[in-house]
Length: 273
Image (cartoon, rainbow, N blue to C red; front, side, top):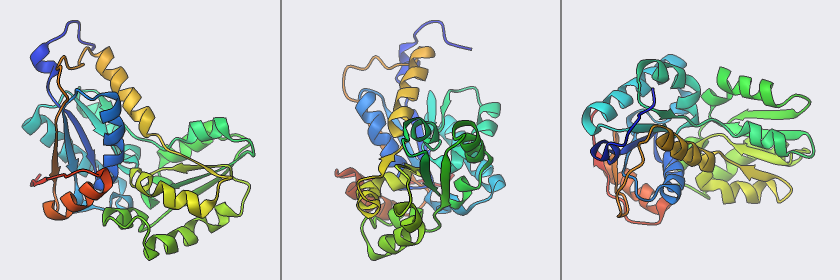
């Protein structure tokens, strides 16, 4: 049920954003650009990273626990699941249980399918996302008469998690997973994991200029803005909003990698959920 009037105190509550690790920071960057006056709480669930190799049951449990923590300890007004893997496995369960608006992250298959000229696209994601019913349905619904390379990239998420953006390991993984795509007629490559956005330049260099990279992060920010407007939840703060960072893992390591990725000093706190 939509709100009917604006409640200033309620509207200045934060937006919760979570991922298995640092990948969701690529979504956070787009949220900042579009919603600079909003407050954010970012949680990296690094105790259980990588999500991409978990079962659906495990992912649902992780998503429920993070959402409960957001609501009970930070009184969030909206949540962004800044993780393709978690969204594909848990978004239905989360929306059944909670009344707050929830924005998910799914691979930008529709955009790639609508844009391809060669009728060939590729999607790279975590093993869990690549095998999910959500992605299979996205492909079935949007890719009639289109050849699709659906590639689950084990360990690529983890490499980014450690701040390795152009390492020998990343190059080896790209060679393993993208050689066939590079030599194909594909003209669009969907980055189906928010971690991969941080190595988009490395990926682009590997596959060559004939293949365009596409991700859904800007669309996630627009959907977040739309839900805030529809539920009359936009902040009326005049100053820039604040972002507070938490990790269920090593806060020193997260802060180091996050600072590198966001190109600004980040200091996270450890939290037990």
